[in-house]
Length: 246
Image 1 (cartoon, rainbow, N blue to C red):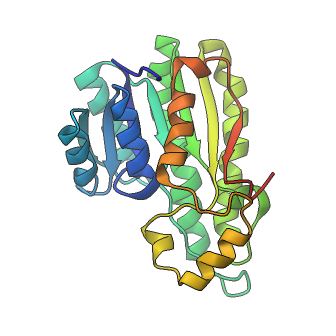
Image 2 (tube, one colour):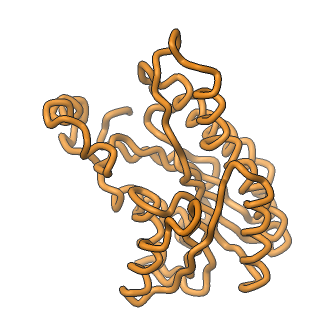
């Protein structure tokens, strides 16, 4: 079992789904989790962590607002004096065929899924480099690796996270800061539950393991990359997709 005791972790998009699963898993390993989302949307996640005996706090965060990100990081540093792990999980989808896609649908997805990761990393990097220790983990997608019709904006943002992370990994490796990516496949969340049963059966036929992933499947990969056991891993993409893309 990995030990994250005394580690301070920021998880963006921690209110539900994959983000909530990641936050709860990290807390179960002893980390103090800062569950970040718009307003108090991560309150349920934090309450669940505390009910299970973990340590967590709610943070209001708009990842597209630089000042909001900087205020969050400054506050965490003031309260805890350290940030050990950043998980860039916040993301949105605005699916549309390219011929019908509006510029704002492109801009919104790029701003939330890619530019926000830059903003969050930029804010935490200085304290990590000063401490000569840190883990940066970004949540991409199988769509960023193989593409998907109607998701040109989403695929671009998630593929961008991969290139961004590989470049950053080379920049900060000498300071003992690792940078990696987890690329989930189709995951059983509130969003996928709303899809018709027939569509889910079609999805399963594309997956060699013949099931959707769970938030816990993704969280397990994040916990490994956040741990000391992954100290010699950087610049990598860990695909958690049941074999959907190889």
